[in-house]
Image (cartoon, rainbow, N blue to C red; front, side, top):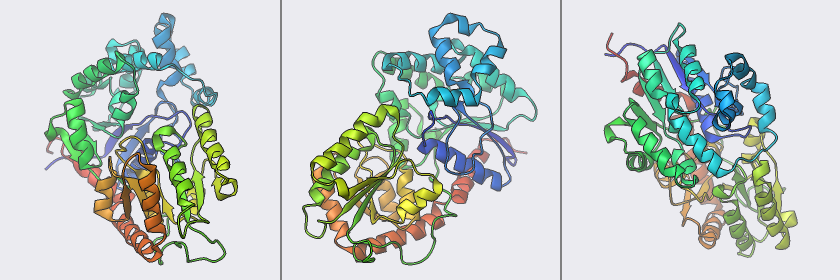
Length: 443
């Protein structure tokens, strides 16, 4: 029997001020583990994290985005005293810098990624030393978990100095890597495959992603551990018959299609706009509305504005609303106003946290038949699948669900019950903790 786990370090990654599914997951997991009696250090890297729950992370940033970029570009910053590094790693300064919306060319990001993956052999070796030295202070962690492989270049040095198990959660690494230009993508994959041998285990949320990443990163199947994705369901409604569908509230006539994700091409907002324009011409949906919520960064502003203009050009200016970036309370309220959620991602999403959020609110979904979605819908049954990257079929599938309100209400009701029971934060934490325990020595 393994020794009880009482202290872990979870190394997460900030997303430059936006709400990020990985940040939300990591923060929820840290809070739930703490409630189970585990002492958890949630350590941000790159930037402070942004979450719509109580923030469980420490008020420090390692591998601060300003520092790692300057050390990549300018040799002088690789030799500056630690006092200058601490100044540039101040959370307020990083927040200010990332709020400026400064764009970094993909070629520069590729070189930085490769260097970070090289750990203490890369240009950011000072940052590796700083993290290792900080974690060496008592009380040391019994286990370290990284949020993805892209921040795990320091694993070999960390394992050598701490002598504790190191795990990595895989939750979208391939999406970032596939955007890198060559030769950086190939070099990054080569470094990651080298690092795989230094990692004790990998956590994934779906069987699909386990199989995919085993091949993509060359991970032995024995190192992959399946844990459920989960969310804090405490402020989502747990009872009742679910939200209205089409005919349930005369004061708000017409079906409402919801989109809840960042406004970015990879999330497929343009596909949903195409489908919605078609949906408005179908029987029973001529008065349908499109409700859009999510983070719109400076880099995505032109894309988002283009989608809004397409809706206006179709004569649908009064048929849609952009709610902006929503906090926790606003998110729950938003989900209470829609009949179906659809985020038709272009990429193969490994998580689909927004699907669990919709289900927790009793809202059915229509999602593309790729990535984690088929597995999630098979397990929970809270919606329908449409052909990926096919707005015609997406419109037909939305129409099918929206014009059968009894079926939609039943789907939402059953999905909500399942999520509150099996995909809550405590269930996720207990399953994750059970995996962590496997890597501890016997007492």
